[in-house]
Length: 344
Image (cartoon, rainbow, N blue to C red):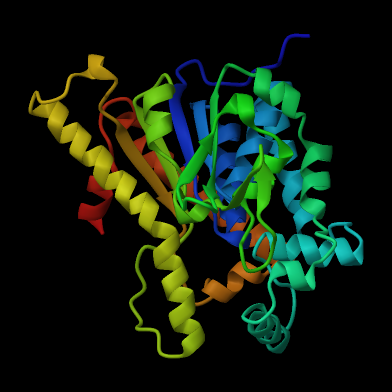
């Protein structure tokens, strides 16, 4: 059966790099929702890590099985299921929230669990290795259809526990286990073994991976959806604030390194030191960022209340609309991250 398409006649091909960040990934849901509805962007490739990996497989599955409208529906269904009241049984609800780095509990309980995690490993407090994420993802995603869907490239990252190196799985390798590995925070869940190799959350080494998109996808444009704040004006004082900021810096480090690497490659191409035929190409980088505010803190990544997720969804839609209004004409012509910095 032919897949229905709903794209603008002048749609531009863009790859999407989706960062992880717990409940704040609902912002990415909103960005994708607006881009799919608008129709002026045709997805050439997707890269995702942790919550970004979940958004990525939902997007890819929807595009593979029904086009943009189906992708919008699958993303919405996933985030509704991930919310409080989303229908998961109680024990699965608790495990799923923690897998997403979301903790739907009052602040004292959050502090208690964080304290316990310093002394008990997931092998201690989750001896049965209960993990409903695999069942939830498997029930919503036709991975065989995703693996066959050659219209887009898909990359999901996880961290090799033994070597500390990131591994980026290709579309043909994507399974529910790969998605789980990408979201496996080491203090909360056991490493996920794939072909005998244990993996942790991909955010430590590729959050998200951009270079594979730049090499493989048939486009020069990559749009990064960044949900971890690059900057915070206030200096953290409490121990928890310090830990939270260290985590933000850690989970942005790989993205910062890749952006610098791509900038260096572009300069080498401009200087004639590298040739596009050598496997390198110029990349037009773009970014939609979740701007922080008093209501968005490291702790709010634990908030699975659907009203909060829906508010992030609306914020993502607005941000995507502003990006298209300001930069659609730049796509295919030049990158806009440097222009974005100059305007800041």
